Length: 93
Image (cartoon, rainbow, N blue to C red):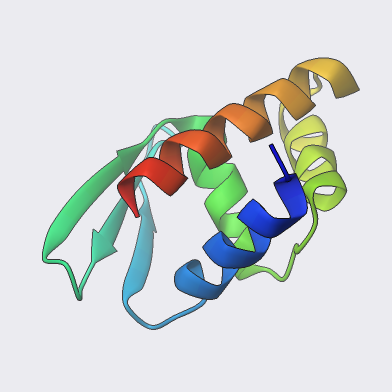
């Protein structure tokens, strides 16, 4: 999987005004897809990754670092989680 191409396409979509993130009290989140009239739910790590994108993180390494900082996980685990998130989101968005 070419992560940079996947990230680039997702970032373009997620950067649009068509998506809005609401983080819930438990750390999970809800994305409102305004153009598609859908509601997507995120677990805590998904909410962190979506927010990292909103905050300007643009590469796989930056997303991995954001996850590591928030959850105190090792780089391999964080990378695997980010890759899983990207695959899942790319199949929905």
